[in-house]
Image 1 (cartoon, one colour):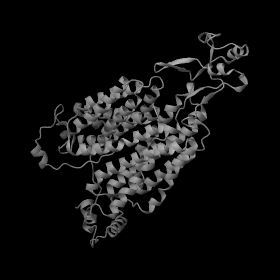
Image 2: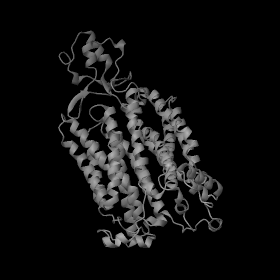
Image 3: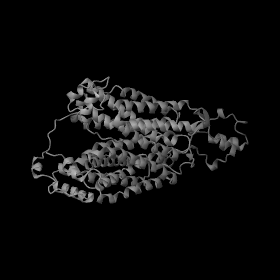
Amino acid sequence: MRDYDEVTSFLGEWGLFQRLIFFLLSASIIPNGFNGMSVVFLAGTPEHRCRVPDSANLSSAWRNHSAPLRLQDGRQVPHNCRRYRLAAIANFSALGLEPGRDVDLEQLEQEDCLDGWEFSQDVYLSTIVTEWNLVCKEDWKTPLTTSLFFVGVLLGSFFSGQLSDRFGRKSILFATMAVQTAFSFLQIFSTNWEMFTVLFVIVGMGQISNYVVAFILGTEILGKSVRIIFSTLGVCTFFAVGYMLLPLFAYFIRDWRMLLLALTVPGLLCVPLWWFIPESPRWLISQRRFREAEEIIQKAAKMNNVAVPAVIFDPVELQELRPLKQEKVFILDLFRTRNIATITIMSILLWMLTSVGYFALSLNSPNLHGDAYLNCFLSALIEVPAYITAWLLLRTLPRRYIIAGVLFFGGGVLLLIQLVPADYNFVSIGLVMLGKFGVTSAFSMLYVFTAELYPTMVRNMAVGITSMASRVGSIIAPYFVYLGAYNKVLPYILMGSLTVLIGIITLFFPESFGMTLPESLEEMQKVKWFRSGKKTRDSMNNEENPKVLITSF
């Protein structure tokens, strides 16, 4: 029996129909880019200090010295969360005593910010941090907000595939777009941090589901030669475009509620896509809805201006079509032998630590020296050459060496940041962007590498488990950013060290480039570990090397 690609080969690979699907599905990913990273500005923490009420009647000198000094990054700065006891300094002010000259400040009693905080509006007019005072003893809520968004992403990745298998690609694609847009809009009306965070979890579920289903729909409709381009230069690059638009919106709209409204509106622009994006004919065939699949293919042929065969699906072939019986596999099969278990554990570590590096660097971009909006834009912009580089490297070079190489490069430059003098901030920013380039390149190669390592029967499960590990990494990542409040270079030392470590571990993987994909666990067990496979270049050229799709996360 012919497969779907053979049946629809008369459509061609890159007609008007395919180009339309390519660009519309890629465009549907753009809102994911700015929604996925919006917390960078929604939960930004501006400079702040304890509020001193006007009723305190302090002199200007005592107002300027109302906060004790603390050591941060090698210099003395006013404390964000403590002030001198207001009653005492008000008394000194009334007596005309001067701070530092007449009164030894180190001997004064201190107290918490009992009257709230004064927040600088140089960068943000308002954020959820300034709205609900998520600083000092409440500052743990800021990284938790981001982590819970990624918990929603983790939950969404569980259900999106199953729902699209059950109800269809198109229906779930637009349903998850609606969830993402609707619950982002509801966040505008949040009355407290708890309400905002619960809604944010649901937005995370819709965000990843939309991404995954759009990816599946594109790979099922597009031909073999276009799929790999769609999954890199299409999906990943358009995600980066959405990410680049985020700082542009945030620069001109510095109130978090208005910013959230502006980021929600583009989701409504996706509604007309319903009339242009078809259901997956492959899915319709799997549901035995052959007439609907034929109608879509006929419309595609008309759009591409090609003749339609008299019979698209042979009735005899349809009679032969039965659900294929597959051997049942379980998660424990990924740990069946010592060899497979070790590869699985290393894969989980590779995905999780690479994800930590990618998301921690992305979320930390506004904390870099200089303009927060420009730094965020550069962090997004560097992803485009990273994806292109990964695509080019995967076409010609061994997997484990190129992944280890970009990880060594990314981790190495991050470790160099601690050596940069404080006055050379532009050098630090450049090193951070180069580190982001290396980590992003590695991240975009992991789907290919993992899919090639495992046999057919457990391949989807292996990619699913390791992808889940990357979600765990994204949940952990905000706490690396949180460490920057205590020492600005500490997150880069940790990220750089872990990235170099996982680069070393990558060298112990078996090589998959140019090898026939394993079809059984027994074949996988024969992989020779600590060196590349024994096949010669001639034998590799004689074998068919199946194409595997590349995606960012």
